[in-house]
Amino acid sequence: MRKERLYGVVIPTITPMNEDGSIDEQSLKDYTEYLIKTGVNCLYPNGTNGESLLLSKEEREQVASVMVETNNHRLPIFIQCGSMTTEETISHGKHAVEIGADGIGVMSPAFFPMDDQSLLEYYSAIIESLPSDYPVYLYNIPGCTANDVKPEVLNQLMAKYDNLVGIKYSNSDLIRVENYLECPKRKPDLLIGCDSLFLQCLTSGGVGTVTGPGAIFHKKFNRLYQQFSHGDLEGAIKTQQEIVKIDRQLEGIPGIPALKAMLKMRGVIKNDTCRAPLRKLTSVEYKTVEAVLEAYDREEN
Image (tube, rainbow, N blue to C red; front, side, top):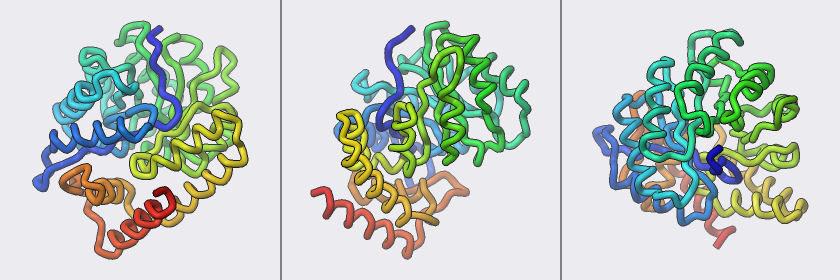
């Protein structure tokens, strides 16, 4: 089994775009270098924050290739490969292997309702198309896909495939987190996709968080993970409360446009363009985000 895993503070990366909506490769390279310097633990391109389902197959491969090459093995990098068809998902997985990514994540199918058997067949087809030692994570975000990967599905797949190493769960149900971690075959590496539950996930036995805002507010996320790892639970609780405060301040503002706006404010990317029908922030939203960023800088510098 290959050694790299997702852990700690994992950044689901955005996809920088030019004003015309095409991929901005130079900003993508600059953004990758920026993330490496922040001290976060892992990179996760082509997920939700990467607008992956709004990109063509060729664009997703472009993003994956540029980031893997720029990263050059400095951080573990796992490519999210879930697409609208099994065939395209398999193609993205094979591409991730070819370009030297450390592993992949696979989002459950979206929009069309799938029962447990359908999900088992979907994930089995993808895993079996890859080298038997190539790490795979399931990605369950039922609020967006409308298809929930239940613990029973994870358990069956973990029992069958040794290279299925964990799951990213983007929801706030801590009972589900506990249920995932009770997998009888072997304990999965579980990552939470809810910033306000980062510490709760760790204390339950999870291994990290997949956080878009962690690209901006990385000092707080990194500090929480380090505090927990070193046994400073009191300090970690305080830091988690600070993260929750930011989460509440940004509530109601579109997440991907907000991330791009803040990265543009930081001078990391040139434009805050999103792929239509996603939009840029309004002037009011922009001022709110700017104020949150300024407050963060005062606290951390």
